[in-house]
Image (cartoon, rainbow, N blue to C red; front, side, top):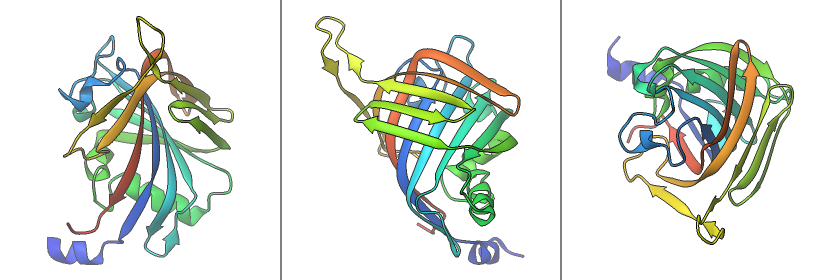
Length: 213
């Protein structure tokens, strides 16, 4: 089978929505600039929520689904060997879970998952209620029985006033504009356990698909 035929037969998908990314880098996450984390041990550990506002994978409707990932990479993401646990709300159907699994593991291609999907193995799937409450960059992400994250705006070190910082990546493959702050998170499931305070937190909007460019 040729690559062209494989592409033609591949299930098409597109998901758009909001992303809530917490990781153990220093705020701002230098992975977006130099490709390597600024964590104390050079690892990348993340607790990320994706709220899919509009989504379709083949004939499976993904609109309204929230997916959370707990991911532990021992070094930089591109060095691989990571472990990931995915969490979805209890009402997520088996068809939706299967579609999301194919997207997030890179099986259906499309950026960013055709790259990210090969950097980790899936350690498990958990179904648990997910609540995300946001007022700008003041946000909490609560996953029942799994963990919680809280993010806030930067504060001006002199005046204490709110200080906004945005990262624009014209060629970014996960997101192209991230709004940055400071966050803390604790999460544990299926043998993956993370806990960090006053580290990186970024809000972004995503539009991911495997449609031909």
